[in-house]
Length: 440
Image (cartoon, rainbow, N blue to C red; front, side, top):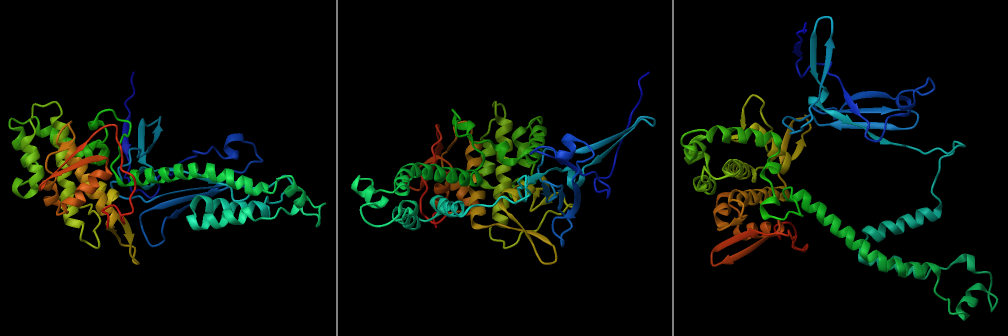
């Protein structure tokens, strides 16, 4: 006969929550090899910050390595892997599920080796030549052009001591000059390295620009063939926030009056909606193939405009209240995503958490809103009049145009009307020295 199994779920904040770790860089020697001679690493479980209640870190050490990982343990952090540990009592037929510590975190332990010991137990150190070349390499990669010129000059005038034995015709230096080999090996290498280094520096520069773009713009697919495949509203929202919004849309699309249901889903439509988003809702045909996606995108856009208008002038933004279902009139799941994307967590001396929006974060919020506005227009990825959303967000029109160009869009202005379109292949503008994302 089949045995019935009772599932029992423990409270998520229990003091004895299991701590789950992983070893991405490989298992410790004691676990991998076994044997009595290998002592397993000892771990300590600590607060991430002494004054704050949230956040934990785990640190371990064996005879070779140090293992460490940490987690903030914030609410609604949109992680897709919140692990539970199950213990099955075969006699009682009970499966007890308990969430892993720090809101279901799997601590991926970073492995470091504090010292490398040779067989003779002597710590391997750098030679003086290694140290000098290390400093030069750092300046070659990151120093100013003036400093690189100084270093190149120093290298060209460096005397190769091994080649100086005395004066006169018998000296190695004079002999090299007579043979037309007056250029030192270091100078020759410097010339060759300068040719190669220019290419390397350009690649490093482009890599850094790409990293900045990825941090500033919404997630994008730079090899997309169609414009509507470059940016995705679902990736902007994150899994949790998108599910919250799409569930609302799914309910509304099964009502007799779909447009009316969408208009009322956020409350009083005159107060809950901004002008540009309400007009979008009314323009979407409920029978179109991508109507649900566009409705969800428009609701997300309305939330992001509300978040920006409410907070862009605040010095401090309050954290989410667990007792309330919304934050600034925005569902907690969505507001949490915005706090993650557009703010920095701040702790005061007493341990109280708040959030702040930097100038760059405000610009990032604007460009995300503009891209969502473009997605909500439909697969053509065109905005006929940028001024509508600029007015709702109270952002200068020229700033909106600059943001759209940074996102790879082409912008045109005819009289007071500014339009924008996204084309493929995706081409980003070259970096400019305009003092920040808005060109300040």
